[in-house]
Image (cartoon, rainbow, N blue to C red):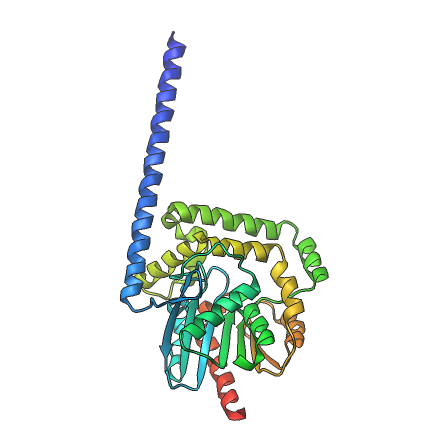
Amino acid sequence: MEMKKIVKVILKGLACVLALALLFTAGVFINHRIKLSNDRKTLEEMGYYNPVSTGEHSLNVYRTGNEDGEHTIVVLTGWSDGVAYLGWEPMTSELEEDNEFYYIDRAGYGLSEDTDDEMSIEYIIEDYRTALRNSGEEGPYVLLGHSIGGLYAACWASAYPDEVEAVIMLDGTKSLTEEQWNDWREESGDEIDNVNAGFRLLRLLAKTGLLRLDPQASGFDDMLTDFDSETQELLFSMTLKTYCSRACLNEADHLFSGEFYIWSRNAIVANDIPKLYIAAEDYEQALSYIEILGNTEIVNLPGEHEIQYDRPEDCRDIILNFLNNLDQTS
């Protein structure tokens, strides 16, 4: 008899713990959704929201800088980087004095609408181009891409060289042959699969709002120490929103399968468009990659992969020098 009572007490205790856990999770989720909505409204009130239709969805196109400037610079962010118009500001603010900037949140990112469409490289480039045309901008453009954004920029310049004035890659993702991809997978062991699984866990924690309780778990907060608390909150909130989007997940599937690396190797055509590659983590590997691009200057700037956060002033100076050289040779 005593044993039955003990079992009942234990079961009741477990039921209470489960109920409290569910209530806590529900509270965290509701709080997350409220903060997400409020942060979006804050960005809209700050003037960052300008939806431009590209067909079945709209992309947010934030236009800033000098409308009569020397160059029209289009920012192509790395994977899951949602709001460059805030995060990249320490690097780009002075560049905006003499140049016009277009910050475009691709589908699912930042303030843009989500999509179920396949986020192939071709699709992403066409989405960017449509958003620019529908904004009244025809180019030519200076494409400024970080990480996978650099790969999109290289493919864009190969497919539409007449509308690209120059390309700037911040530690850009490199294209690979199928053999190189297979060798990389073999050398990395389970690393690629672990990163993929880690993202899916972060995505789940982001969707529930639990990631807000420990921003350090995302690794993103390490890059925000130089920003004020309000900007940190906005950047982190939009990063969570981006993590949760279907488009970002689909883009990740293309990345982790190796499709982007291999497809781009066949798509990139060496041409005379001036290019700048700022190498943060992979200078030696980048040396062989730039031969594929053609007419590329490479600058070694050791640091984190997110070099625009790690060494923004140095990046700014290197980019400014590159732009000045463009003006002298044009």
